[in-house]
Length: 499
Picture 1 (cartoon, rainbow, N blue to C red):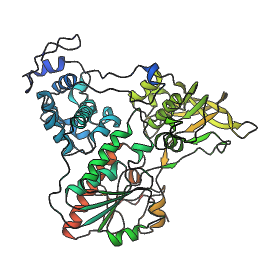
Picture 2 (cartoon, one colour):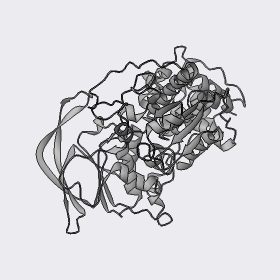
Picture 3 (cartoon, rainbow, N blue to C red):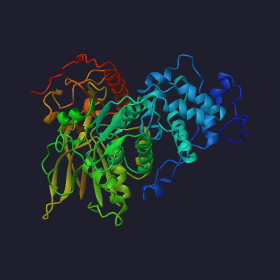
Picture 4 (cartoon, rainbow, N blue to C red):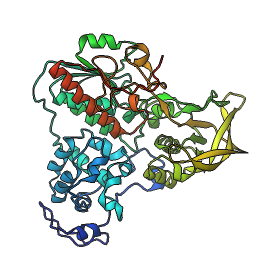
């Protein structure tokens, strides 16, 4: 087949095999656009926003890869996916070989292809990006994962050998699921213990359906179960079972409990009805299916005017969710300017398209309630930007000017703290001052023999792919320990451990 549209030069694409192109010809191919729902339509439903690349567009995008010998894109990937290798196979039309290459390093490509910030990771280092637009690595990765699922050709995880060793994993989020897949492939028996009633962690309770459909996560979990991984839901480690009890029946343990502890600002009125943490708001909608009311009768108030506080991806998710639940006005309240927003550019763009009203350079100072005890007013102070702080972003300074915004719902999305349950009930596991578990870099070993930790419980709220990278590193270290039986004390920088 050949391309004849106005977006691409006419290039002959045989059924199998890639045409021989010079670097100049590759660079002349524009970055392939991904079709998506119309903003006015998608703002009223929870269907996925992006439709994904077509097979032709995926091959054209893969042809843009310059096949650099130094492979700089890999340096930005926490799990070191062999990006040029799978791109070459996509360009040839051999999608099966391409997805096998990816899954050798990344067991959750349908997820990472949708939610990872590729623009600040692998795509940031793409050679093409120095002179134009980088290769759309995430979009091609997503295409391959979706193609594999649609074709029903996913290869099961097969252990190299049965070791007879048992590993317990606490938390069924991206770090826990990744570690489980690798450990199962290594031949170990794996038990995952999840506090919620559904596995997936932040993938199911935090990320909305329109960005990551739950069916995608369920499909990945089923592949683990086919490999023999046992998943125990509604089990709260540190409450119903302790770490010591788990170690009595397992040879090693990996803690991947995430950063799900809500953070508030300590403002007057934060205890009013209608003021949510982003965690509670998104969990009610995502995991408890409030968006399917009345089929799923999950209590969440109908809102007309919503203020979402924050400028990260979670804030964007909450704001766009509120819009889909029928709010007439959704204000995104952020104390800095747009340039300082930590959210993905794509998410910010989608939010603007969907009618989210950005109140930049504003910061809440108090909330007021009506006679029923429900929030009815957000008092916002206008801010001005000063010099850059330690993060490189310009610091906001209060101006003293107050703006009153009538609201009936507030969602606070300013970050999360580490889940405290496991460290609180396990004194041998030391933590940093803010509660993050101390773990050795590169292995995930903790201060307790036989226990590893990784993901947000160690790093703080980070990206899905970073959590997956931590899961992979811990799995390698656990396998070495189970194979040799030797435990060496980890080298950890103790940053103000808890007393």
